Image (cartoon, rainbow, N blue to C red):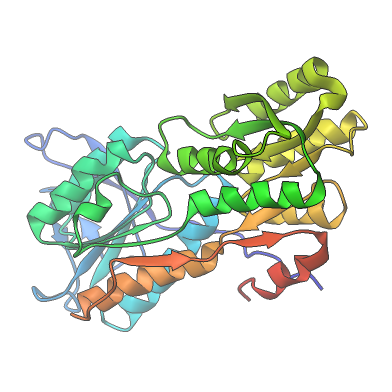
Length: 344
């Protein structure tokens, strides 16, 4: 029987009025429990549980929209909630970055003003996150970067990054296509051009197939992780390339689901469509023979590990700078492995 994901329930949205000298206006602040409130003076007051030697964690989410990051957010918050309950941290605050690096930089300052001493971050964009990492280093704070990396995260050995090798993931996509076909025309649907993860997932396909003359790149487009753009591009490719198009490599499952849907509607079940992320709707399509494969980068393991590493740092424990999450190819033949790995 399939295990279903628990729906992410966001609770406790508190609007804080800050003083005029801060100049920030009303700001959204979310906390794991109701025991923390932002005063009119903009200061964070906690109950007696929160003493000066206690730690407050700031969690910068990438967004609260796409399925993969919703799962990451949920797993991180679960660990932080337990750490607060156990008295390891005094509190935690969550900010929705809305996939905007400028917003995330502003939110970092908000979290600092709220008294946050430690940070866990899923960044919207690699270069855009550089000031956030630099700021944390200046503060002497602990920081764990999960999933999407900041461009300068490896400059700071004291910080931790927890993520899969995204180039290896797209290498795996290409290897899978080569195991099914001797060659042919292919297209690539990539994410946002300035996003490091999107670039790595794009480059990994080319890294493998550019070495093989039997494979021909027909087109590659940055679809911004957007299913509507992916549908339009897929329709254009079917019209332009017809039977010459054999494989579509997608930088995430949202785009892959869109591309596979167009192929299925057009009766082109001969086109191999491969995604990355292993979200539940993609798994269902693979199981039903409507999509070929995806790469599983266990979001629960990734986020739980990252949050636990931050707690270890807070306790004063030594943690490795880089913790790699494995990539797993999921096809119809081994889809049960994915179901077995889902949280209860």
